Each structure stands twice: as C-alpha cells, then as structure tokens.
Image (tube, rainbow, N blue to C red; front, top):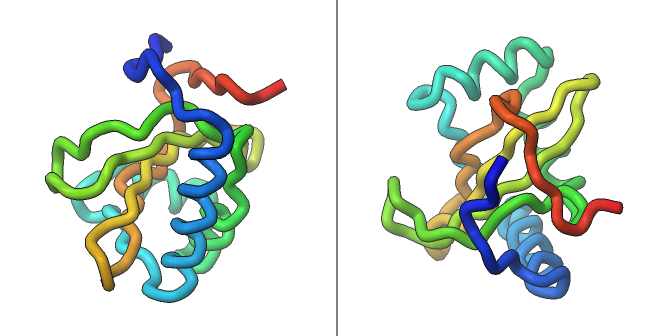
Length: 124
C-alpha cells in the first residue's frame, strides 16, 4: 500500500491521540458505522464479535498499530481520521477512527478485513 500521508504522525502524537480517544471511548461510548458499511458488519460477524469486543479491541490499540493519519475527514467533515491495523484471529483488520464531535461518541468508521497489505511505520 502507498501511504497517502507522506508525513506520518510521530509516536508522541499517536500516543496523545490514543490516550484521548480511549478516555472519550470510555466516557461517551462509540458510534460504529456498521449499517453504512457492509464490510464492517460482515467482519464483526465473521470474527464472532459484539460491540463490547469491538470496544475492547479499540482499547488495545498502540503506536505499533498505527498506519496513517491524521487525515482530513472527507465523509463527516469533522475531526481528523486515523488508521490503525491489528491482527485479529490471524486476519489483518483495517481500523479507521475519529474523535467525533465534542461531548459525543467517538466514531469507528471502518473495522474490516484489510483489502491490501497495510503499512506500519512504527512496527519493529
């Protein structure tokens, strides 16, 4: 995959984003875009996950899972989007998240099996 963001965030920026994201996730919860994205729903089904499992996976994201971002939000014209990837049940999962609006849930835009090899600039 070609990284669309030629200047990746540095590890400190990623850590700050993840800390803030996880805090907000715990406080406000998550809006999961499953109805708008059939790939998301199918992946969650194939992995036999529920929303609590999804939240647990998002809470385990670390700098090594970072792939791209922050990128402008083209869909909802809100906060920047960040892309992470994780291996779950031996399959690479593409995860795109954003902080969402203030005093509202974080948003999980994408949570589906990767359609191409992902790039992880901070993975050993």
